[in-house]
Amino acid sequence: MLRSIVLALTCLAVLVPGRAGAQQPAAPPPAPPPPERTTAISGYMDFHFNKVELEDGRLDFHRFVLLVTHRFSDRIRFVSELELEHALVAALEDAGELELEQAYVDFLLSRTFNVRAGMMLMPVGIINERHEPPIYYGVERPFVDTVIVPTTWFEVGAGVHGEIGRGWRYRAYVTSPLNAREFTAEEGIRNGRQKGSDTNIGRPAITGRLEYAGIRGLTAGASFWTGHSGFEFRPRFEVPVTVSAADVRYSRDRLELRGQFAYTTIGNAGELNDALGRAVGVDPNVASALRGFYTEAGYRVISGSPRGDVGVFARYENFDTQFRMPAGYVPLKALDRDALVVGFTYWPDADVAVKFDYSALRNQSDVIRAHNALNIGLGWWF
Image (cartoon, rainbow, N blue to C red; front, side, top):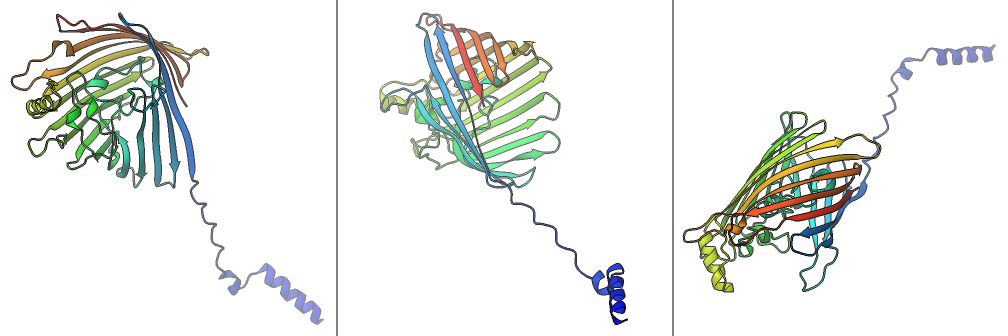
């Protein structure tokens, strides 16, 4: 009898939980796994055949670039880019270059505000931040993005970036200035890049970009760089430099359009020329203003074929590294140049581009003639 009563009470306790059982806390949910730390390797390469008029043809493995990225967490990432130019680096020779073009850490705080520090690309113009071979027409980069905006332009520094509103993006950095001692008449400020190598930052430079991408297929941007670059001539005089650029890109179906305007001012260019002339014995004839612009149209005549895509393009450029001269100086007309570049690109794969173009150049000189060039290239990224 007692055994039956105990068995009945046990069954009742199981079927009808008591007050104490109802108060038992639920098991806590399992903790989310920690974010996966990932490292990725990518890169791009290109090599060219260049035949300048009246010169022998040249073959050049122009760039071999490796990119290494690492994600420490959802909030912190590392990006790097190491580039070998012209296949060979030889001591005491004007051969190739081994350059650390990017090596920065991103602290991703929110959509609107993030912090970046390290070696960074200057956010000026189109090509300086977007120069992988399959994504632009032409074997060589535009002339404007070589002698007016000195692509590839990178410096050490820190800054902020993010997205605001609908379709607006910004970047703003404090970086090393240029070195005015290396400015030239033909290439402007290009040789003045310090490239993060034991740089002088007595008076930091500021650079920034604001762009709008809120309409499908359209990206329009305005950018600048400004800084005092005469640290080798202080306290006698300073060399303030400002680079301003505006650009637009538009693509729809098979059509691709882009254009860019860039303007550079060099303050106290007369004093700079005098100082450099005394130092080296030859006046460099550096201008007080440089100007360049280009417009480009491309069209994919074959798109979506299993054998790949084919696109044709034409680009007109005007670039003058002697646009404005300091008082008492005469511009070198051979450096007021324009170019018509026409050609095609074949993409056997979206990440591989076979390129061909012909560049017809002219200048305003009656004495020195600009030479045309035939260019063939192969570029890829992964």
